[in-house]
Image (cartoon, rainbow, N blue to C red; front, side, top):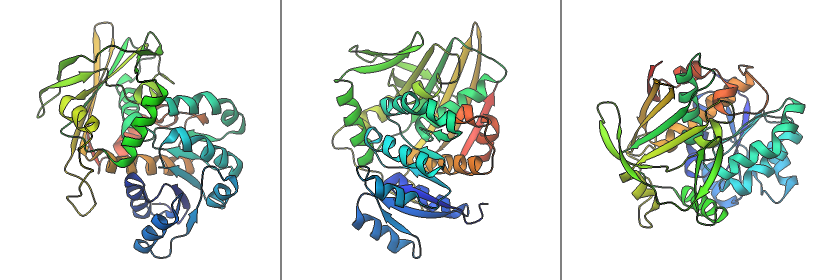
Length: 343
């Protein structure tokens, strides 16, 4: 348990931000509520009496500095991250504190690596982008599956979601990403991101039991194509999404997530099936759980806890699999996910 250390949550009143605030308190941290909307912040503060409320805008560096003043770390939950990541990272660097975000936006994560890697490494700062269901969990699973391999030919990350009811933030992030790509799609092949206009193929993915084979949309590309190649020598990284989930997230009339339990989780379930291949040999790691937004909170909070307790392997901008001991990190998530490693 943490010993009352303060952690600013930027975008605290958002759907994922609320899960992060609740989990920080559960772990013994003291959240500081920050974000752009004063009224939403105050409404959240009414649910958490006594917590510090610090309104801050990404276009006002002074307000961001106030939001991070005296805290131990910051978790950025405010999308779109194409807009928020760089200003909040800059504020974190000035404050000398670690930065973690939950960005699923491919280009925003690539920008973080490209723009801040040198400065963060030189100053010994720790910046962990995509510390979330997309980008972070897949990277941890792929790293754990690699085991003692130093390179592999391919990594496949298949997302077995029974449904996907997107939040307002997910929709906004998708719109920004689509605009940045000019409507094109993206994949990671031959060791680099490639933009294309090809239609996405549908195929069957052999998910393990009890899910079993399901139709998936191939090259439904997620943030894993940034995080995994940032530290693992794998020239082909491919992601897949069950067709029902892919259809739900792109449909304009899909409702937002609805809570079904006392933790605020939706009924959505997931199975993430990661396969790494070297030659004719495959290794697999599987994670199962409930609600992709809710499970992002223990991922991000565990990351902050490990950074603040010195359980890191590097400094600078680093993905989850590089900066943390992947198998040990995944085992710490056991209350929230069921794990199956088959190296």
